[in-house]
Length: 244
Image (cartoon, rainbow, N blue to C red; front, side):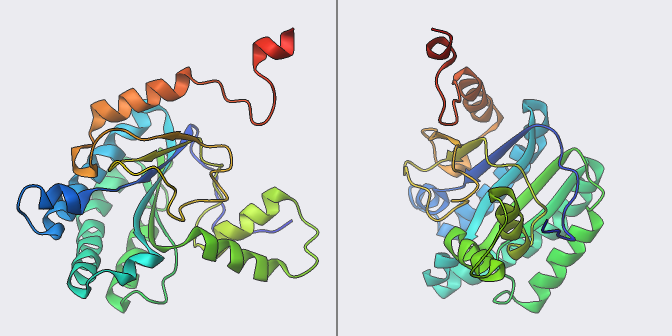
């Protein structure tokens, strides 16, 4: 079986993924630069992290910067990279206090040495967290991670889906985690945008009617409540149909 030095015991609870869309549009609607919206969005991340465990979430994966986002204007990209470093510096101590383990998934070879150092320091400092695993995707592409895992597996991979999933975790610098239970996307769009394609095979999808800076604990609570009202069949029959 494939092993990874990033494997660990996951917190109990749901795995929720979030595509944090709408920061720029929210800022533009208020006559502000896009980075104003991204800074506001970072504050929402803190609220989501604090709220998640009480709602039964054990793993929270946030889409912060896709591999395609390098196409954005250089000023916005550099501002986002500064914001990532600032977030790591300001939130690491809070994560330790609240039992949150922080993990950055995605490529690192295109990040600055200073940001890589900040990531490594935050991951090491929060490594003992057991209450919530917080994964933040930076320079992340689900398709690229699947391709990279396939290259590692070779032409005659004899393993299972679970073992291939462990390979995907390894190439994205992540602990092995459960598949996504619920994927939430704000901002009005209804697409996956190359996020957690393998892990979302049977994820429930939710599209709250708000931009990411408007997301809050109350809205998250409603989405989780709706999730628990759904019947997940994973390709099987509904309980009533199976019984009959």
